[in-house]
Image (spheres, helix red, strand yellow):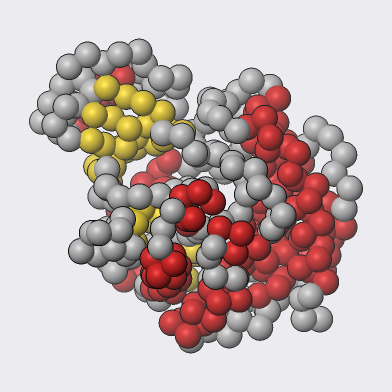
Length: 349
């Protein structure tokens, strides 16, 4: 088949040769490759050899922050969770040699389904479908936090003790590494988080970026309609407090409620989905966890999003990333800082 032009950041012939050496017969021939839109951090490509489709993941093209974009870590957690009740794509091969295509990468199976990424995607679903989708996503999150890390070979995947203080420090450091402008209130938010960290919670596997657009779900009309078929983007997975996942999800869900930007608008009630409080109730019922300290974790979620988006803004300004919508990322960060401060004010003292 005609491969077409290689997308930025991917040498298709070099990757094909590498895969042929490690997984002979996996590819029927040099595949056609395309950059999958919608990602804001690592780059995701679809490989199609005319018979099967695969997915390749690699870090962004430049300004890679220390400890971020770790392909080996992402591949390891996929390998551990594949075959458990948490649905993930089957990992197929991992390459640590940056010389093949400019950075480490891994290849996994392609999982067919729909990704609800924007408000229009959610609005196109029937009302009962939107409810089923949200319920399924919260059940999968609760089930993830119920997986025993030792049982799946992840006992040494991290240190749950002191996880949240380290997270605040880590994302403060990441923010400083990409900070190129004044952000009013962000230092107050950081200091407030540092001064009020809740006691350690259970040490579970946390995804680190759990939200609807990191899920592949069955579409309407399928026998398993709205079931979660795969959880994607595990680059920030760790062992830590499970409320970190829930808090970040609520921050994405309820933050910037007035925005109608098709790229950055949240997928919550503005898209005809249930309010964040109903997500929290579903999770609490499924997991049996105490969620009384959740406002602090929501505030931390906003802080983390700020650090991530500032990194993306930095790469866009310096011409080091590809994809649509990056020119608007920087404009929304100040409102996220304000949302974080508001959530922190609601946190139990």
